[in-house]
Image (tube, rainbow, N blue to C red):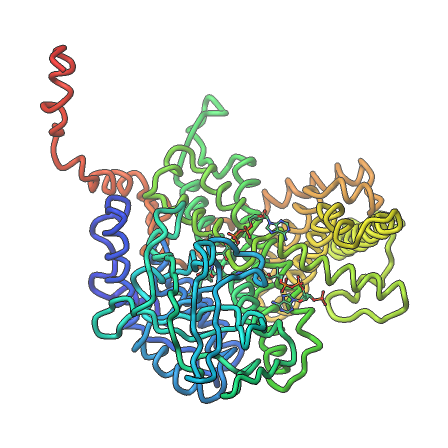
Length: 627
Ligand SMILES: CCCCCCCCCCCCCCCCC/C=C/C(=O)SCCNC(=O)CCNC(=O)[C@H](O)C(C)(C)COP(=O)(O)OP(=O)(O)OC[C@H]1O[C@@H](n2cnc3c(N)ncnc32)[C@H](O)[C@@H]1OP(=O)(O)O
Ligand SMILES: Cc1cc2nc3c(=O)[nH]c(=O)nc-3n(C[C@H](O)[C@H](O)[C@H](O)COP(=O)(O)OP(=O)(O)OC[C@H]3O[C@@H](n4cnc5c(N)ncnc54)[C@H](O)[C@@H]3O)c2cc1C
């Protein structure tokens, strides 16, 4: 997907900054741009594409979609509607619906969350009751809390959606399943009979994604609208269960993996803006006889920003690694082999939370590092934060996902203690759980993070077992220990992030030029050293680090900042974001931040006239005591 082509689309870029549009105008402008974007770049993810091509297309989709400053009302069409048809439809259903969806003959979304339930999927209340007499499903929202609430594009954009609903046959519930539902007339776009649609209102971000609500009043759809790859309902109402009820959760796993690469992209954007601005901004005079220095020369500024570069690299390497696992497990699932699904689920439940937690915090730190101008919407740092922080919640709230990962870690550890072999990314749990002497090398520190994870997992299992021995139910024991269960998952996730970043970089290092290899490995070193210092408590507790070692680590960290400084601007330029995609007064390649800040300020409607009409209407009478 060629960004040059995207950016050459006439009218794609905004004349009036979105900040000065009304809520309604923002949406309408985003539809206008999305149509332009798709007409020019009608990119489809071909099923025959290689893993690499699919991943690049996903990644570039994310990058390119960034030009909307917010996200597009088409976002769910691409990121969930199409993947659900691919993953949950029969061959016949895929054949029919994929053609229509890829050609943008229809626009879809993914409606799972309800006003009353988001996390607890098994608590969803939207009903799909099978009527064998008419071979139809009757969709119904029995109470207000069962209204679908949040789906992107649902309010005024999509005319179809995947509805995740509870299947009832002859009064018996058969769990949550996906249904393809037309919600608007294809000609008039009016909501179909028995369907209530609307927008949920203004939000912290995502204000052009058109998140909506959807309620059903006994709306009928034909039997062939249930996506039946993983479970079927026969004409007579016989239910045929799938090999694993969690296969219907497959789209969420896909998006969680997509989010890790999206965080790499979001963070890269934010640090490009903040670092370029830090290179042109001069402030204060530490040395009386010298000019004001670039703020990038303050080591505290380097501390705020360089970790964001390294983290974006780390998330990208982990995302590409995870995509490989996702695609290989998807191929295995297609042939009925399910045994690697739990590991993929657990990995996604670790890496999606950690990448969103770190990216959100570091994007905010990039904004804070830019002083007052970072607070301007024209800097596009606040909006980037708004988009990133949403990912903490959507696609599985982070706490909930870390607890899901903890389920797998506890099961793996208990099995290991009983002599069952560990495999894949949890194999290290069988390793040495002590560090006899601190090893400050990159590999030594990564090994220490693995020991921290082993010790946290084993100790929280002991807490669980002690609670259960004391008579607590497993559920109450689990809840009581949940803070340390999430801590154990985070430690596992940290160990994975670090070791995959290092190993993936090592794989690539062999083909890099020596100067480039040196700089990129400095970032790996910075990332590992930063996290060892951030988690120094764990290192003291479990990795035999001494105060002398900590002192050495601190000095190494400072030297790494100094070593990276000469290449810092080059490292963000290497993310290769065009100005139109950065969409930022502070981050433009030419460094003309002040001129751009002024240019954007003059676009404020308030600057169209020197005296606002409220002076004569209110202020003057008020100041003359006449109000
Ligand atoms: C014009 C330009 C446009 C271009 C756009 C380009 C694209 C841009 C891309 C941008 C990046 C992507 C953005 C996408 C935006 C998405 C917007 C948001 C969408 C949503 O939020 S959709 C709704 C998401 N909702 C959730 O994720 C809900 C979270 N809850 C759950 O997943 C489950 O409830 C649960 C997992 C927490 C619990 O489930 P349940 O109660 O059923 O299960 P148990 O906890 O009892 O566990 C039982 C066993 O099942 C296993 N399990 C659970 N889940 C899974 C799974 N998914 N896969 C496999 N196995 C699973 C557990 O591990 C348990 O196993 P065990 O062996 O018994 O332990
Ligand atoms: C910007 C955005 C876009 C979205 N887009 C879509 C979409 O397109 N389609 C769609 O279907 N949904 C969408 N969602 C909804 C999203 O999936 C849900 O918000 C998310 O799953 C969390 O559910 P909830 O909001 O109901 O919070 P709840 O599930 O009510 O959780 C609230 C809080 O309770 C705590 N909590 C809940 N359960 C547990 C637990 N088991 N253990 C410990 N603590 C717990 C957590 O602190 C959690 O933050 C979107 C959400 C956002 C913010």
